[in-house]
Length: 105
Image (cartoon, rainbow, N blue to C red):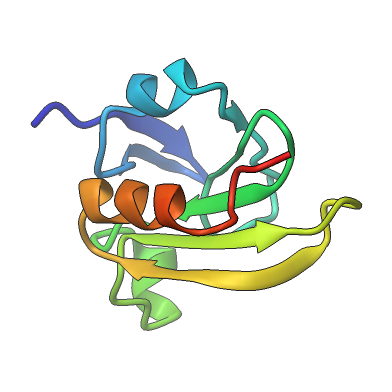
């Protein structure tokens, strides 16, 4: 599987653990903020937020994070609503997102 690597907080090879183009094709956009521990993407309607953790990154290791993806639902004001889950597999995460209320308008 092809994986996208980016520059993130001084790490020139931060691994997103997926081909980010697959997510972008679904309308997700980069919502990363420079002070976040990890890069993130939000769905086109602003109802799902996904963080991408590189388990080899020193900052992620320092936080003792042991999963590659964290996904959660946002409310109509793009505030945290509920967890979708923690995942180590991109395909499993995408299945979970499609199952729930998640990306409905």
